[in-house]
Image 1 (cartoon, rainbow, N blue to C red):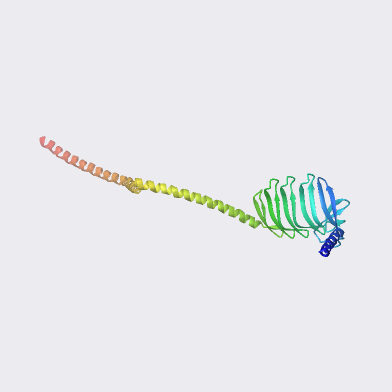
Image 2 (image 1 turned 180 degrees about the vertical axis):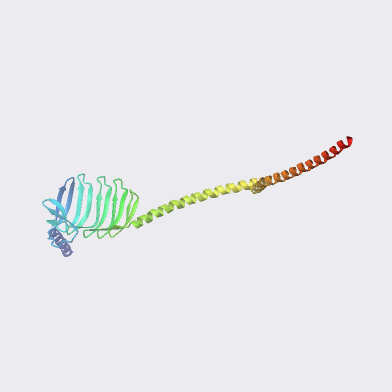
Length: 267
């Protein structure tokens, strides 16, 4: 048993020695924050293009693209407010951000959650307001925007592919919204029309509207016929009156002729 314990202690001491030999802890005061981090004692000679490296020198933490002029950060990184409230937490690998990183407001509410892979944003990225409401949810792949980006404040959704927005999807979303609104309006109008028609049919059944309509049509037709027949009747009457006048004149002429003969006889 004693031998086993001694072996375990040796292994722990060796691992601790190996850890302390490669990495050293540093504490930095940066403006209104206190930072606890670790620096690598190994020199980094090869730097990847377009990647941001974080490094330590002269009691300060610096960052630069594709280079480092000091000891690169390694392992856990912790950043605190002066109130000892945690402000930021993450991990470094040879000066590059890796894994899940989080930020908090001073009131303790989560501010940001993002995923890194060897110095590039890769995966889900979410931001929150101080009340804990989600503001933005998006995705990265190899540090490029991809997938759906949802802005919960402006209520906009944009799709990205290889860091480029797809405007057609935006239009399609707008068109879908328009069609939904139209469909709702049409449903409302159809229900209104149906109820209106039902009311009309009920009234028609009670008052027997179809028969009245037939009577109205007949009266209209008779009125139209009367209007067209009036001038014809007037012309016939005129002809009859003319005939009567001619007949009377003819009678008066006949009467006048015998009177003249009678006068001659008297003489």
